[in-house]
Length: 386
Image (cartoon, rainbow, N blue to C red):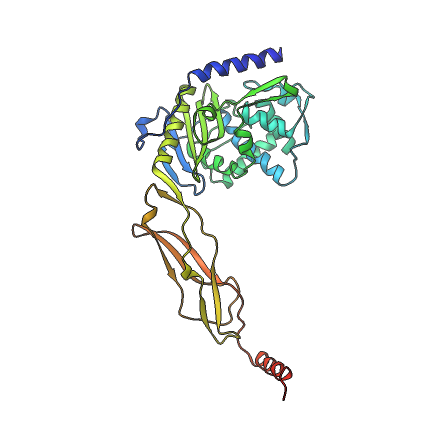
């Protein structure tokens, strides 16, 4: 029976794929009326800057996009060593009782953490999500408490989780903006993109087939993930991540009437972002690496250094307007410690400051004192012939 259900699932997704259009990138600047979704956000993942929003803070259910937070806690448990990819999880009766999309876990059935993650993000399996939650925290209830705690730390002010898989439940709500925040946090765990980029896979030695619920994997250039969700209360939702030429965007769409609408809206958001913005890596001016005179120091100068500068989010074509300014003193005074801030490097565009970085001392310079001078004097005498 499970095998027949797996085959039926593949056939269903194949039919759905025929109705999903290929989206091109020739899209003008968006307005709220261009989207079917009642709530949407486009965010740059590197800076967290919101590039477009439509009713972004409206409180709504988000269905299985809830699993983004579930996976954040799972990845943190793996990073801390509390959980390993090859650990074996035994499905509880509670995990096996979940409805909706699942992988039909039987009570007592075992599966690795790796396979559970795959099932959760690729097939949006509610039972696998609960099994992972119980493996991390003992009970789903405790795990959900930790989900809400993490949401507060991330600044998700409109979110309350009541379960770990997104099944409709009174008071289980979030917002498009909050979904973008937690999506940004999840993709900091680069390994998750290995899972979210899977189109088809299998479990149980090929007996269970997995097909990704994110159709953009087959239709959108640069797509990297991330998670879909659909329930009667939430409608059709998606948080879609895509990357091109160093620009990694997050498009969140909540409350669409159909799956086709959510994919279309997410594509429009991403198209707009890639058409309008770019990531620019500025050059560090040579003037930041100089020697500055030091007063009252054991050496008469100190070298300066500037650390790595970050990529900048700019409007497309505006990189030529970026100018750098270096501010350093004519001299400084001992003592100087390595890492002391001696000046600053500022980048401007259109007359406005867009970034600032410290220029620091590359080494220590001790303040001159009688003991050190005397020591140097006698050392020089000992090393010379009379």
